[in-house]
Every structure is written in structure tokens, then in C-alpha cells.
Image (cartoon, rainbow, N blue to C red):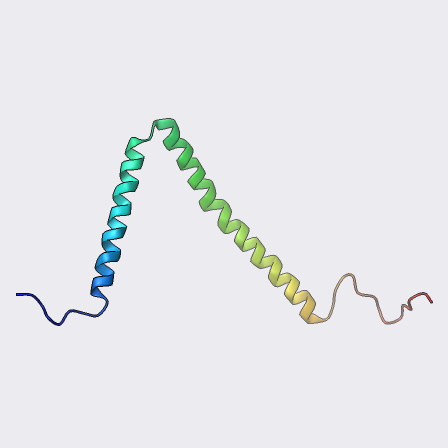
Length: 88
């Protein structure tokens, strides 16, 4: 007997899951069709992408926070002191 009180969003999840499984099958077929040198190149590229991207994003956030802290604290390396007068 079919359940007439199905959970809301169940159809969306089922279609999402079917699409995800389809993509996984295509990925497995693509890897199975690759030659060994191409598979090695893809593995090296993926490893570089996984290691370099988080490093770049982390350094960007650190330098952005340092710049923000420098500007909000009221001090900086390139600011003139109050005793210096501009030439007239």
C-alpha cells in the first residue's frame, strides 16, 4: 500500500540522490576509461588543488584581518606623527 502522507521534500531528496548517484557512476566510468599516466596526472592535480587552495584562502584571511586590525587600531607604519609639519 502506498503511503499517502509522504514527508515534505521527500521527492526533492530522491531526485537529488538519483542525480548524485548518476554523477558518481559517470565519474567511476571516466576513471575506468583513463590510462595510467592520465590517472596519475589527475591524482597529482587534485592533490595540489586540495592542498594549495586552503593555504591560499587561509593566508588571504590572515592578511585581511591584519590589515583590518591595523586600520582600526589607529596606528600604522606609514602615518605621520603629530610633530611633523608638512612643507609650506
